[in-house]
Length: 358
Image (cartoon, rainbow, N blue to C red; front, top):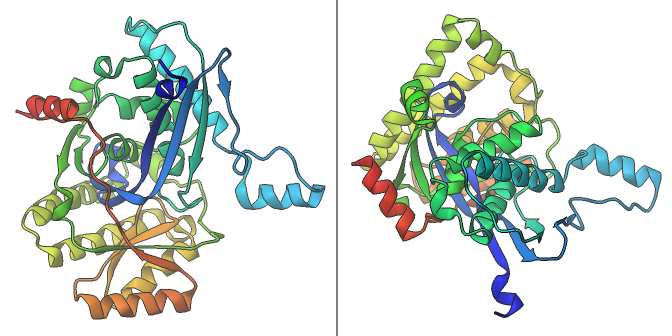
């Protein structure tokens, strides 16, 4: 067999949380989809030793000067993709060992690339991990032994390994691809070890627009008191999270009916609830401004995730889209029409999912 045939290359796409976030972390529901224009690619090549290859841009270790190094760290942070690849290798190996899944004794070199905007709330880190997991599944020929529903858990476990705090929503969207409705209720999580995930036809979606800052600055404070307040039984947080989860359920119904006016209302409410729960200091002034710029022309908008980018819906059509583009340009934000990617699951995986939902 030629060496080229042994190379495994897999892709995972950026995701947009349309409704329900952040209730996925609190036993809620979510509607999410993936974007075709932004993705991470991981390449696995057989090699004598196991090598995690640094990216020439994202994993810089050589600098022209000390000021350059400092500037780089201030803008990019300390973390590239190498640690993400290492973490999923460990989690994948441990999962296989614990579940008596035998792996061939062969080594490989992992490399990655990504064009997902940094710190834009589009799940760039989990996309790298997701693509790497897909490579490992196929290199070791164990895709059929690790259920689709379990794979988001492995990605989240890899991120937990690195101290990244997140929920399952993003990972489900990236494992499945396309448009997915998710139910993370405690009953399902306790009984199955995962939520109920339902792929939907991407043609149900109206035209949507992505807004983000090319050079993110004030992305808000990382730490929030919401999780602790929820654990402490804070009635406002608990009732608000339940309402956020209900928005995803109502949004699922609105999409099936193609009731985009209702979808716009639900998106607006989703952001308003997040703002009340988390407060402006956590959300960040630039993130809030992106939402307000969209709303200034009558568009509905909310965060794609926890901040960094905004998804907007223009219920009044093309004239409103033009106003949105003009307002974003004047505010210094990038705006582009969203290209929704289709499902990345194989026919066998989709058939298995449909059977399990019956």
